[in-house]
Amino acid sequence: MTDIGMIGAVSIVVAGLTIAIGSIAPALGEARAAAQALQAIAQQPDEANTITRTLFVSLAMIESTAIYCFVVTMILIFANPFWEAVLKRAGG
Amino acid sequence: MRISPDQFVVFEFSFEGVGTIPVNATIVFTWVVMALLVVGAKLVTMRISSQLVPSGAQNFLEVLIEGLNNQIHEVSQQRSAPYLAFIGTLFLFIATSNLLAIVPGFTPPTGSLSTTTALALCVLIAVPIFGISRRGVLAYARNYLRPTPLMLPFNIISEISRTIALAIRLYGNVMSGTVVVAILIGIVPFFFPILLQLLGLLTGMIQAYIFAVLATVYIASATAPRAGENATVGAAQSTSPGSREE
Image 1 (cartoon, rainbow over the protein chains, first blue to last red):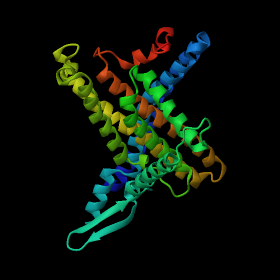
Image 2 (image 1 turned 180 degrees about the horizontal axis):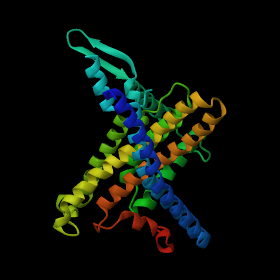
Image 3 (image 1 turned 60 degrees about the horizontal axis):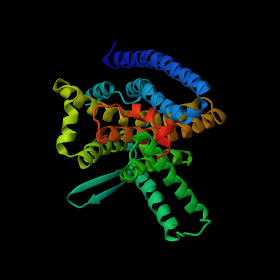
Image 4 (image 1 turned 180 degrees about the vertical axis):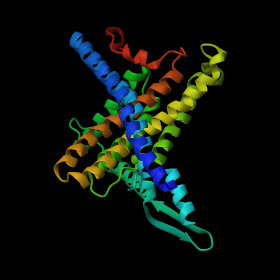
């Protein structure tokens, strides 16, 4: 396989794997955080404001691992530096 | 496909013999948001009044400022006045640029890694400034030696990594909204992209809120009298009956 074909194939496969594996753990984590927060609100409705605020902040923190994977995927597919380097060498 | 508004050059300033300065979409839309905020605030405050019933726009700004004050106080457990200008500006800028994403032709400047990195660097610099002005150089520097001097490298690494996380989180969320809508328009036009745009509005607002809250937490943990405490722990206890009467 040529360099370009190789890089393209590997990038696409790895991009899929990255987002697939990388979204499992944050999904489990967010589900657990939300469930715990709902339980806490059910037990102490007076504290709903504080719990909701802390929940949002922690959800964003948990979600950022998935977002990192997403950014890596986007870079691999749309802005792949190796792809561009090979193209430049082939063109020049 | 463009995944960053940085790559879209709107026009170029050219100077004879010196070269050209490209002006990309990020810069243009950042200035649009800034102009909107400044002119809007100026227009409202020009006709400010202390009547019993303020005008609609003045009422809106008052609610906004009071809400920001309350949130900063609840999260940081300190007087909100010194932080209002910085945190409030961050929140308003990010929220406005994320909400304007529904205007056709507008690309949110927060969907560019350059903008979010700049905002995160502002937070990185603001933390020691607030910390030193509140507690003095020595007391602030001692923060890095807690709990033991062995932790110095890890404290520095955490400072850097949380700045990077702050930048990538905002960039990833806003950029993903734009990219997913662009992809879906090619596959299932009309209805489904609209739903995702609505979701994007919600995420944009939440991300602005989270950026502001995290900045507050970082600043509060640097300025709190007892260093080394986790500031979110303090925030969680903030609505105990005792502290509410203050």
